[in-house]
Length: 292
Length: 269
Image 1 (cartoon, each protein chain N blue to C red):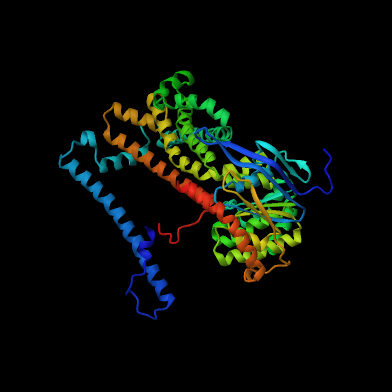
Image 2 (image 1 turned 30 degrees about the vertical axis):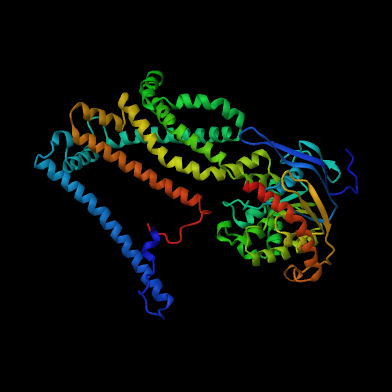
């Protein structure tokens, strides 16, 4: 619990302590707590990297398979300054991002529209639910070769894969969110005079929004997976291709370096998404003490 | 269909309402239910918990239709949702993602009014319920009583000729509830609407209404009707100590008690 830091313990203050003093003490405690959290986060990362490095250098683990942080850092440095064997790193990153973003946007828009439409229409939901279950049961990755065969080595096949990765997650949440919309609220809107379209737009969709956002958080990660798997199976550019080439030349540092790049990008996207959500969800009650 | 000028606001004539339980069993909520609400009249409906009181309101809104019998609003049979009807819910039915003023202006906007007109009307209604300072707040930032006042403004802004209320104040504490009663009577006397007020609180019913309908334990039908002849304007906070109020209360409770006991015995069985 976040309030623990600001708990005023019995006996911590003498009777007659002013509110200002208590507030100052609470602010101090909160700052202290934030610093402790940050310290341990950094400490654990440093310890992990150091242990890895030492274990590899002392040959407790074979650096041929596990690489080591210094080698990965060096590979990243080479890639950013000199480019990869397949051309500049930025271009590969750009290609992967382009595929992921297009797949993510189209997949989530389609997921929201179809999820809301089926959520609003019981009959259609009953008819189509079986097909959605069937298609959903296909492990998405096995579609990669098919998409590449049909759509070629370029952008389209990766976008298609990212799309199917994203679509089902968003669809399920949008559908569920619509089903969970409060019935009294819907009745209220209808009696106030809302038409079906007004009801969908200004009551159903906003109330499903927290469900939809929960799925958008994870599904950008899925879009990246789709793009990279697609590149892995067949492509001319992209981070997935870099991993594939590193694998082919037994370049462990290169593989880990590519993973680090993907991690950084995914974290950045997650951060952006949280910012957008906070802005859209300002109507929601905030916890009493916000300590990040 | 020609609408009669002087037809009662609401008529339920020998209405029955059956519905299917999730397991497919047919249940009866209302049986041979007859009720008339004159224009401008304040009617309270009391009955044991779960007897089907709320069903009567849903029939009038058109959100539910009768299995047998007839429901008429202003002399015409109910077909879909009537724009002359306003409804105040038991639960919080405000839109939590909209500010107070956006909640209040929802009705006029849904009905195609211009935004400037709706805003002006919403400001006016917020002033009338004493919430002008809270225009830009979100519902979760308000107390339960304030949220109810927003709900009242949201309903009254549409100028309903018929006001249906489903245990609207049951979630409020006793002091706030009395304040809300005063507020409601004040708004009602200005708006001249016909009211059906469903409650399980007999004192609330007597303090507010012109007529009290007592329902039987489910399936609900009308057990008896009492006309409450207390002078208006009423001061809800004080009226409960008057002798005539106490007499009404005693008589009607004797009647209602049987039904409550039946309903309780059934639930316990």
